[in-house]
Length: 160
Image: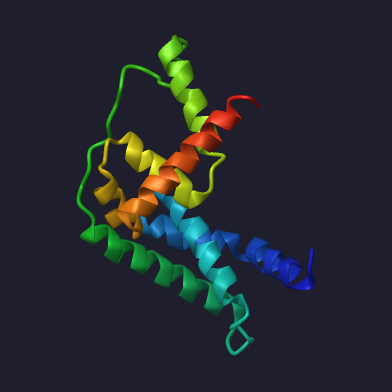
């Protein structure tokens, strides 16, 4: 590990209780606290080069932690409340032929590049070439050409 990473790890380990405390103050939901903690670590890492010891490390960590949580709260207030969807079936454990074929198709699709993956998924959603082109930002003709190539790639993967 590089010296910078070692120093960052040392600082985080020494101050993880403070980070967790700030995150816990903003949410009692364990998943949300974990998300806040992770987001705080990301923000600390991003700002680590800019931190030049102008203030105490603890002060900097608290400031970044609080700002991260406050930003999260502001964004949360703008979000629309949603209900969690529960299903009585588990699509990942179904063993019928249709489910296995769909799983195989998605494994192949995941091997494609990001743009190709987006195009084929939109096509599988029965979107027109015009709609796909509009969403992706390419011409209808380009969508057509790309879909032919993508389908050929997927067929070739069946031989793997």
